[in-house]
Length: 283
Image 1 (cartoon, rainbow, N blue to C red):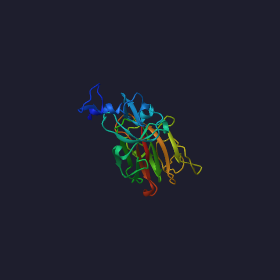
Image 2: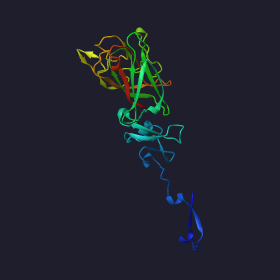
Image 3: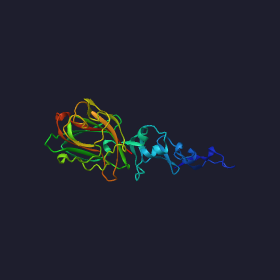
Image 4: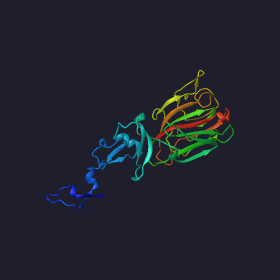
């Protein structure tokens, strides 16, 4: 764009006139405010890409290139969409940082049977899913899995899962089946089943079952079980307080992918039996 200025206001060599001179506005403004030589030249949440301040392609890339970036909501520009931005909350502090919060809009699909689904939003705008199974002993197993879009590529998922009621047969944390009684859980998660010592689990509450009449917090390891004992390792059979843990699982590389759970033979009041997912992040 050019701006017409009266040349009479200026002296051009020894000639002054009342004509107009076209001057580019960019020349008047000086260097482009979005130009850069390094990431630090850009506003928080932006990266220097080919000498221009640009939105990062992911929370992980933003964390890698600007490690000082705090938790917060940032505009991201996924690969292949240079003219579009995605607003996402990035966890930049926990578990190495670079985690993107999954919202309802990021769900690609769900697979379910014999469950009622309740979808909510947490304080950060993240997805909260609660599943109410309808699977008493002798009835078909209830299962559910949800798949996360790959607008931004991801290889690991972190989520908090909570468990309520008394359920004797279950499959969790990427486990797809329980052999006993032919019980089959969701099989399209495309996640590597949780491996103690390899995968991370934290914030455990009542995940170890009952020992000497007391709840054990530490997860004992089995990702599938089918017995009616309310003591020992079957943490979901003992009822009582809500049990929960936060886990990080790896993808197999196949698509679609996302967490899933199966449940059968509910021995408590069906209305008190449920499981939920909260604080779902991918990286």
